[in-house]
Image (cartoon, rainbow, N blue to C red; front, top):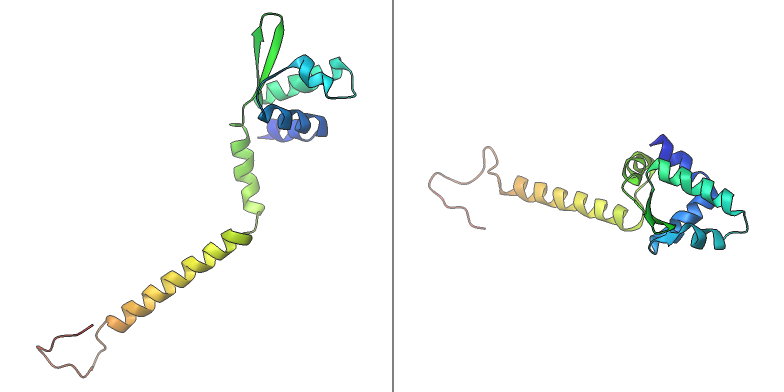
Amino acid sequence: MDEVAGAIADPVRRQILVMLRGGRLSAGEVAERFAISRPAVSRHLRVLRQSGLVRAELVGRQRLYTLDPEPFGELVGWLGQFARPTGWEHRLDALETEVYRTRRERRDQSEPQPGGSRGEGEERTA
């Protein structure tokens, strides 16, 4: 998880990850989109590759990079503990609470009360 967090700490590497969401790119195609040197882009790609976020495949003389989102899983899970439910999540939690409350009230109303007025043998009607 620490390697992934370190890899995404740099804004250039985050931009590379966003670019690779669209599909695989060569190192040259990635470098063209930045105003930094090709060796600097290569270092960023190496960090991403070492963290497991990017895979490299050698095709002829080109190295093609693809995104591997799997290593994000552990980091996302850890970050989830800090997120507060908002929007739909909050509303669905409230709906779930209301459903359970309603079920409990119906169950309580349908159970015979001690000392109730029903005699033995009387049928209960719904």
